[in-house]
Image (tube, rainbow, N blue to C red):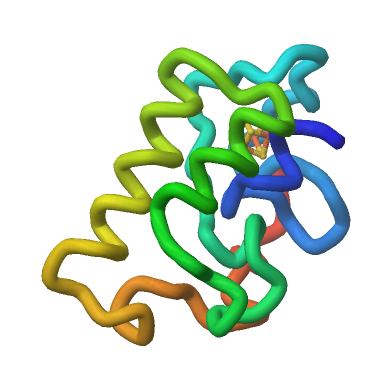
Length: 97
Ligand code: SF4
């Protein structure tokens, strides 16, 4: 399991949309977590605590964990999951140059 698998910047072919190499550790300055990367379908999302447990299980810590928790807060506060949860196939299709 790599950090990129939880990041919305990972392209469908597995490459980084920012052109970064896959980090060896669970750390990346551009890490942008997406709830759809944690839950296969939006209905699987059970709350912020679920996200936290999954993130900790996969070894996220520090700033990367904070970003996941902030995403959980955004989902909880004032936004319906339909507003926040990205739809499938929303990854960037912009080719790397
Ligand atoms: S921004 Fe970092 S975590 Fe996200 S896909 Fe690129 S290398 Fe991976």
